[in-house]
Image 1 (cartoon, rainbow, N blue to C red):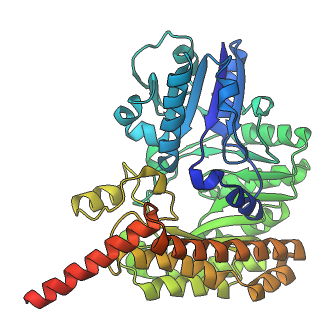
Image 2: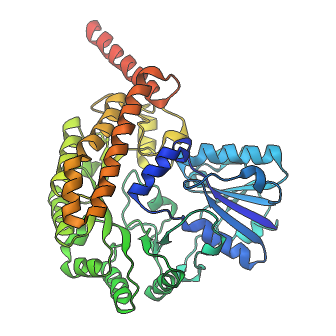
Image 3: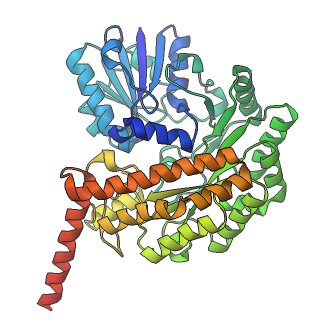
Length: 466
């Protein structure tokens, strides 16, 4: 059979200017799930192709001519696009549609309205039986993959869209459980691959000619001794890339040997969840860190020339506008390379979602807006539109010409130019959102402004009544 995997992208992320802006943020890559599952099907004798909509348009009409099975992966923000693709495939072809991924694993009944079958959980053990028709139940609940070394390596030969950066997942899950996090729940319990297995995959990517690599673990440095061993092996075997990105945590700054090895192995770009400098907010989301830990981590990253992407969560109940602005100013002060302001997003299945639903604070029910860039609920200390403006205010404050020059001096002028590009796109995005909020009914920004104005009017009426 001919099987096609599609990782959909929302309307915004398929917009050409957004794709261009993405090139300033990072390098084209591909999520590993479809490459693993597709590789399994290829070994079983099927013809397989994998497409990422984030980087190029997919000619669905052409694919429907000879595809027997479409496998579509979903996150919450891409679920509407996945459902749109599935409905079109059913309307225009006889192909079977299988949906999987984090969103449909939490809401399989919703997904089943658009799919022939839904796979809940990790699909390695069931994908062949589902595609070949031996498993026929509408919702297939996959067993947990206990031994990650048994999972085949991703097969990049079946990828048909641009990619110049290899993704490596050395673990699944996370030993922590922040209240807004989906992956620590979808992939629980936390599991590790052996160092030998990880090095074999990295060696494969070196032979394939990749110059860039991402460690996609939720927390690559969770097990510091294991992270050190991977770095030592990379250095000793000449498996160092021009740039390697990873997700870390502030506690990595406590280990000088780890920092030195990370730098030598060119793990030189890290995203750390700073989230907030307000201890009450950190405790609220069960982050398990202190503002002093955050400051030390940022300074150590600068010392070892590991470029810090500072992730800040906007809209936690304990945070005010001033707390958000203080966190952004801090990121700039410590020479963070990039800022990732992430609006608190209540994903289904998380404690944050359950809390906000219970308190009737959800205001947007369009899953495509659940992308950490748009407000979907009423915050505690401001209106939804005020929080949305704090998001754009954060990127305007952080990205500027002076900051680009500073980054160029610290890390090289190529990185300064990329920072300058992010400043341009941040400014344009902010202006576009403001325009849409006033002149484009039907957009989320127009909705948020209307909702906020109505909330303010209701508060004024309550004051008058008392």
